[in-house]
Amino acid sequence: MGEDREWAAVTAALAEAGAWLYARGLVPATSGNFSARLADGGLAITVSGRHKGRLGPRDFLRWHPDGRCEGEGRPSAEFGLHRMLYARDPAIGCVLHPHSPAATVLSRHVTGPLVLAGYELLKAFPGIATHATRLLVPVLDNDQDIERLAGAAAAALDGAGPCWAFLIRGHGYYTWGRDAAEALRHVEALEFLFECELRSAALAHR
Image (cartoon, rainbow, N blue to C red; front, side):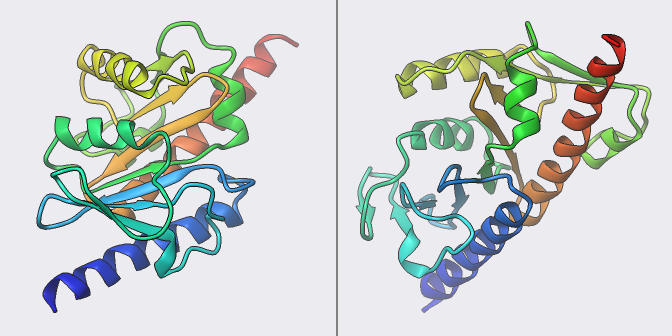
């Protein structure tokens, strides 16, 4: 019964996150994928191709640490990126992958990591208490070989210091938190910062 209650709570939180993201145009056309860690070490992951604004109980799979998946359908092809993040950091409880316009455009015009510096809203991220800091967001070339992309992401995160997201060029981004609420806070902060960077670049080229 405890596992059933946990599953219901975790998937409900992910469904609420999906509705919030869809309402803001951040997961269009069934794009994106979400996951959450379970107490037994398994994961809840969205089924590939499902509308993220209308997620229900059948739109999630339960992944077990031995590799088995329970449920109907298959996980996103990008599930390997989620597993890489959970394996890196036991504090991660939720991973969200939006496809926002701001992130997608910005990722196509940045060389090297995106540097977010001097913004008051950086304090939305754990461990940051002042605007007088900077946050590196690695930018990776898109790759349909997910194992290779996960390896590149892990290497980039190793060199980025404290980090709460990475961008995939022309694609979207991954962010994470202790739970769905914290991961959504990171999405909201990142969207604001990405938009500020786009507007700053536009002004610089006037």
